[in-house]
Amino acid sequence: NAMMFATISLIFLGLLYLSYIETRHFKAAIVACSFLTFIASVSFGPRTILFGYLYLVLLLIILQRFRQKGSAPLWLIPPLFCLWANTHGSWSLGLIVFSIITAAGFVQGSWGRVDAERWTPSQMGKLVVTGLASIAALFVNPFGSRLVLYPLDMAFRQKLNISHVAEWVSVDFHDLRGKLVLALVLSLLVSALVRRTRWRLGEIALVLFALYSGLTYIRFLFLLAIVIAPVVTKILDFVPQYRPEADTPIINALVICLMVGSIIYYWPRSPELQKSISERYPAEALVYLKAHPPNGNVLNFYLWGGYLGWKDRELEVFVDSRVDIFEYAGVLKDYLDLLGLEQSKAILDKYKIRYVLMPQPGGYSESSLTYVLEHDPEWKAIYSDKLSVFMERVDPTPPLHDVVKLR
Image (cartoon, rainbow, N blue to C red):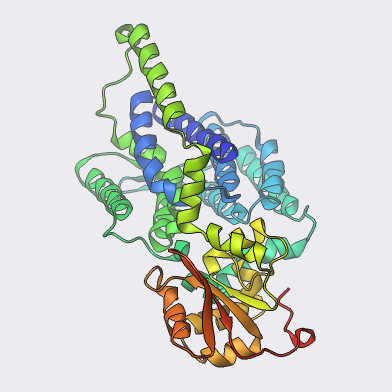
C-alpha cells in the first residue's frame, strides 16, 4: 500500500508540474489534476501499470521541455524505455505518444484553429535518433523480442482476455466515473466552440488518441487523465491566479496539519483491512482448506485465484488473473464455458475436477454454476460461509496419476 500510494503521488506531482509548466497557472493545474484523479482511479491498486504511467509523465515532461526550449535531456528517454519494457507492457503507449509528438513536427501550417510548427533539422535529427535508440532499448530484457512483441499478442491474439476482463470494457456513462468523463468531453467540446483557443497539431492528436483509448477501454482512463491534464488546465484559466501577497501562512499550516492528521486518523488499521479482504476474498474458506487439504483438482473462482495462490502455496489454482497464460492453454475458454453452463459436466470431467470453490448463489454472475452444482446429486457442499461454497464430487474421480496437470 505504501509503494502504491508513493507511486500515485509521484504521478500526480509530475502531472501537476507538467500542467503548471504548460500554463503557468498553479491553481488551475491543482483543480484539473484533482478532478482527473477520480477518473484515473480505475487503475489504482498494487499494480505495475502505475510505474508505466509514472514513466509516461516523465516522458511528457522531457518532450514538453524539448518543444518549449529546443533542448532537453533526450538521452534519458532510451534508458527510460528500457526500464519501462522491463516493468510493464504499457511502454507501447509511450512509444505511440513519442511518435505522435515527433511526427506532428514534421509538417508546418495552419488549419482553422490548428497550428503545426516544423522541427528544426537539428531537433528532427535528435528525435529520430532518440526514437531509434528507444526501440533498440526495448530489446534489452530477459526475453528478447518476445517481450517486445507481447503488446501485439495481447491486442490481436488474446480475444477472450479483452472481451471478458472488466477493465477492458467501454466507459459506462451511467455510473459516476462515466458521468465525469462525459462532463470532461462536453467541456472540451464547449470550450472548442465558444473560445478562440488555438491548438497545436501534436496536442490535438494526443487528445484524440487518449479520448479514443479511454472511452473504448476504461483501463486507459488513466492515460486520458495524464494526456488531457494540461488541456483542462488551459480551459480553467478563469480560476483566479495565485497571489503571494494574499497568502496566510498560519492558516495554511493549520490546514495542512489537519489534512495530515485526518489521513493518519482515517488510515485503515489492520483489522479493518482484514475485514475488507474477508468481504471480497475467501479468507474463512482458506482456513478450512488448510485444515482439510483437497485430495484432487480444485476449480476456483477466477477473481480468487491470485489470493488463493498467494495465501496457500500448496494449493494449485485452476485459473487466476494471469489471463494470458490460461488463454494460451485453452483453460480460460473452458472456464468461461463452465460459467456459461455449456457442457459443464464434460469440462469438469476433462480436468478431473473433484472440488469446486465458488461464490454463493447471487453473489456474482458466475455463481450460477454454484446453484447448478448444489442441485446436482453428484456434488455436495462440505463447507459454506456467507461468501463462498466449497463442494466435493460425490462419485470417485480417476486416480491422481491421471489428473491433468494445470501448471
